[in-house]
Image 1 (tube, each protein chain N blue to C red):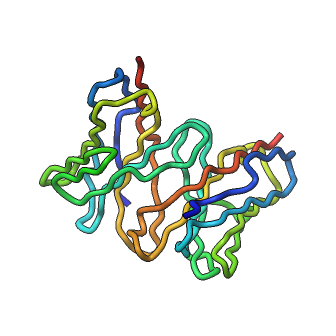
Image 2: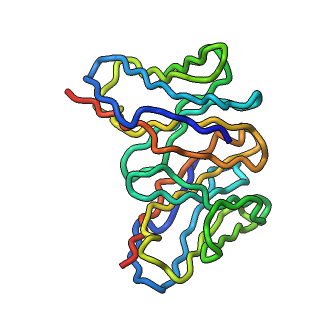
Image 3: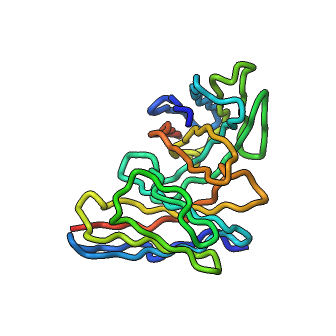
Length: 111
Length: 114
């Protein structure tokens, strides 16, 4: 499974756009990129997933360049409730898929 | 549509004891995975159950065992508890209609070993 590297922490203010970049230099051809969000004392929550270019949903956007060696999670106009840990994962779709989490990026949103 | 549920929410045990944690998957899901999350760390994969069988296991000792029932619910058992077993234990479920790396997590069980 490809290893990912992301910043340990980030700070932002309410209303700003936050971009969290993840490096995955050894991503395999069949791997997708998935982001999870975790609040304290809760389980991770699936945010967004993509293979290439750009994916957007009601929560976030995911930008993936052509070489797929990195990806950027974009959170538009963050609020205090977006304070959480964000995990970037890469992996396939085999029936025995396990999720490999790193330490994630701790995002702190201040007033 | 009920999501993943886990019980109990919190648990306090002493070293050497045994513990059983329970998980009910999201409706329509047939695969259950268990993860251990130590404070300040990302979740670590323990094992995965499908069709009542363990089909993949992470780097955890045999003290950690599990079971899946015909209704797809699952149990995680930990024997001979150590202080280092104190963690948040997460259950995640997935199903055939979604990618295997799209898993839905429960709220977790906080285990404290004294």
